[in-house]
Length: 93
Image (cartoon, rainbow, N blue to C red; front, side, top):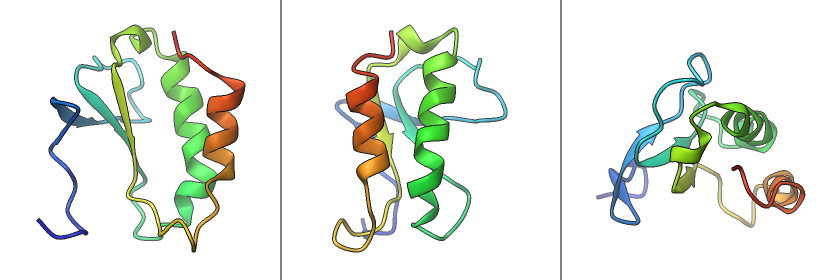
């Protein structure tokens, strides 16, 4: 698998894309938060929005793992917004 391919499993769970257009869908597996854009920098702005939508989902208690990405290299892209979201929201349940 190359570095440009999505993981199909994480933490022993199948990876399922979170759909912002359908945040009430069942959330079984490891939930991937990503954008449709090829621009990795977009995740800097989109990740907190996706996390807020996930945290507001009535099915949020089904989530046992979250995969964020694809994301740019840590030395190129600021991840502070994502880290701060988890500090401010230590649990989504």
